[in-house]
Image 1 (cartoon, helix red, strand yellow):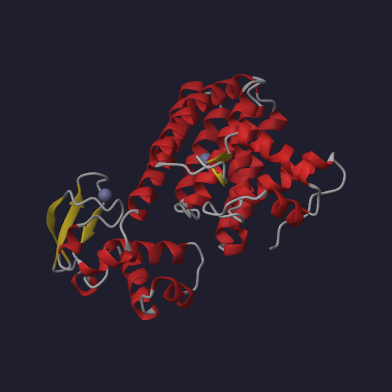
Image 2: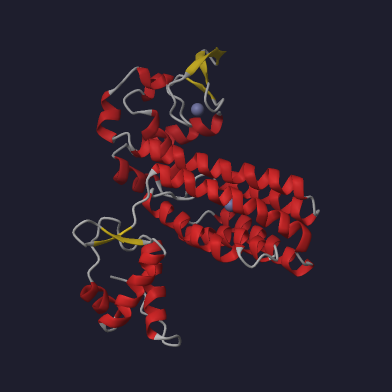
Length: 321
Ligand SMILES: [Zn+2]
Ligand SMILES: [Zn+2]
């Protein structure tokens, strides 16, 4: 257990609350792990009273919940929860960017842009260890906009939603899927605010959060396909969209001597890849995503069971498209 011990400057229950919350949001405590007061007290080296207080507060914030038998667990978020969470963020953050267009000071704009610049340069270095830092910067981006909106209700409301966004991320095992897209979406939002262009800011924040919502939906849908069943369905694989995994695809001419397809859902164009029919498009996409997130080929092999040479070929052919 590598739990951070509570920092000794705030009241003990506050420190315990912060330490426990961080263990929950970072995924250090798993969603299937039953939380027991005495064990938590031992873990954080405090007595049971501050632990009880911390638990009570986390229950109020809906990060912890007890089941029918009174056993305590981390709140498990469903696809429906995820979709509604983003609906709320869309509504509130529209308000947030409009307020920011009207009220952001030059210093605040600078701070918002600073998170962007840092995140962009971190992403270019591509280290896996930087993922957490990158995640923090992306959350800061949204928070700083809310802070500059001059609406005192927005920051605490969005903080609660952003805690659950983090929880969602650990529960779907989402690494940063599409970091380049996220950063260019953030740029658009920032530029609109910097130009005090409220209609454009609303348009871009809505676009960004709707795209994020879509990314989460795709992850949920993917996680319900099990590896073993996916591997036993050959042939038809090529007709599944490699991006959104929809089977609604239609023919789209021939390229490089291969049949081309287009996805009716997300408009992604792709070629039939017969040589990879032993693995599903899902496994293939997962390997490519892991690689894009900075994982080595042999590590991916260990996790997915796909030979590293096959993965190298997939990554190459994805880059050629
Ligand atoms: Zn964002
Ligand atoms: Zn698609």
